[in-house]
Amino acid sequence: MLSKKILKTLTMIGAGIGGGLIGYGTYLYFKQDSMIFDVQKLSKQKLAEIEIRYPDSNFFFESPTGITLQGFELHKDKDLPMVIFFGGNCDEASFYLDLFDQMEDYHIVLPNYPGYGLSGGVPSESSFYIEALSIYDHFAQKYNKEPKDIFIIGRSIGTCVVTYLASQRETNSICLITPFHSLEELAQRMYPFLPVSWLIKHRFNAIEFAPKVTAPCLFILAEYDKSVPKQSSEKLAKAWGGEVKLITLPDTTHENIMEYPVLLDEITEFFESYLKK
Image: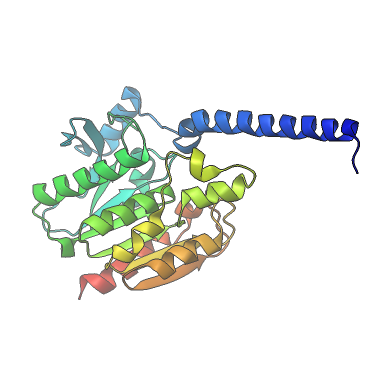
């Protein structure tokens, strides 16, 4: 039988560990917004430089929620199919102007999330979802695009946004780059000693929406992705409601996959196979 002294010591240690976990959990709860949303702003000087390189590319419009959304358009032509791109949590839309300028056969829309770039509002899971619908509706109506003429690409956290959007709106086909099935589960893997489901405010559980999506999807994984386990991407792919093609790009990471030389070739080949149908 344990002595009273040992029991007292164990109780004190347990209380200390418990208090430490509560303190750390509280810290993460209040810090999670800045940890999840690495907000990137756009300076007026940078915008002026962009407008010289890409004249008439900048857009602003007021969403039904009352906030002003900002971003960029390339190859504006009512007769071209449209591609809408939703980036990662540390992306600003102008980062991808040079890349998507190469997709000359598509009208490109690069929106900034609420709070990012020059968009108003506050970043959150719900605001990302709501404004994704606003962006889709605004540009579909403005250019009189039918779902068969609209393609959507998402990267990292943008894959969750796209999955939600595609569960609510029809689209021709989709590309998800380094997708994950649930930010909540990824966070639980990272902090196995904490009750993440109680603490997390922005779950980004794309797998909840995936079965409702009927549009075909290209899943693009990075070979050496240390942020998203391959199993997470595959879990989302298995839950997808439409046709799925899954590829892994060699010698790529979560951070550099957008620089892969034939990334756009893979995407456009997939899109064009459905554009013809």
